[in-house]
Length: 239
Image (cartoon, one colour):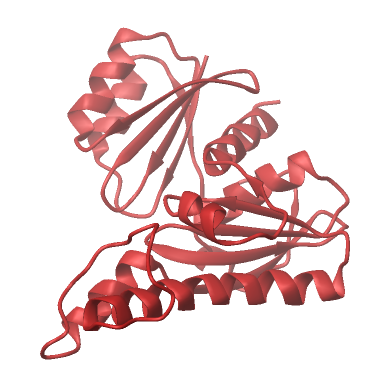
């Protein structure tokens, strides 16, 4: 069984795959919980993706349990081409999501939208090559920025139901943050499909449900896109 370890800024996400079939997802805040899971199950190989420093306890545990692991980085062999200019600075979660999207829609132009702490827009061409994209603040970050960099604006959180035209300060903040977020996404999709009428758009990340409820564009929603991509990479390099 494959163990996929996706380490974010706040949480560890661990997923089990049998070959290319998703089995189960775990979410932990402490590395000790990850270790306990590994002790309780028989994993043969693993891939680790991280946006921060990796606790050495993970490596020590995998070596003790004879789990053959790979740490995803810019030197990892990928099943897609990569035309990014500074590969060493490319977020591993971004490339993993694109690997999965390309796996599901090979030889097509693809836009991958990952709406998490930041929102990223990444592009694949019909030659199965990663081209690059853009990064901007996610929903929660936009709310926090308004609160942090002003003297009086309070901090609010995302609400799925909100007034598109604000009549109070709270409503205005929600309209500004959430409308701006949606308008940005719609513009990216619109411009991409002007160039490529049959382009595929994948959406993933913690705020993907908010996007789904507020745009009408035809998109493929997959909350496990990064995990799927990591497993595909693992199968590719161990193939």
